[in-house]
Length: 100
Image (cartoon, rainbow, N blue to C red; front, side, top):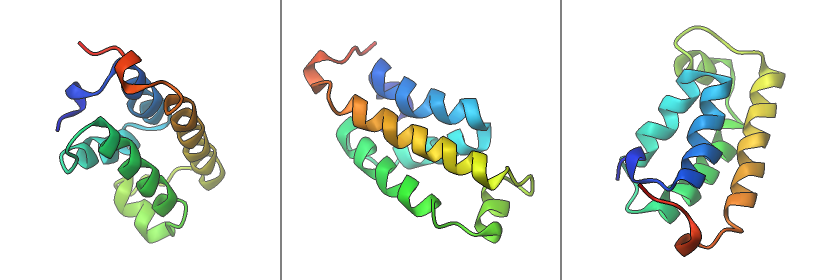
């Protein structure tokens, strides 16, 4: 799937939130979407990715942010916001989400 296939709610909760922190974080979720069969799969894989990112060391972050390391505390705050957004997103039934 492509990020253009996501509902407005999911796009805001994950893609826009990631972009507010750093474009390189957004790229990770864009890449992830290409390995997902549908929106619910994307949401679940996003949760897994975020949990994995919480364990990243400086080498992983250096690679992910192309040598421009973010502040680790701010990075973890952004990951928490993403997870919080997903918790709220999952409260919205799929059939009530808006699609273009």
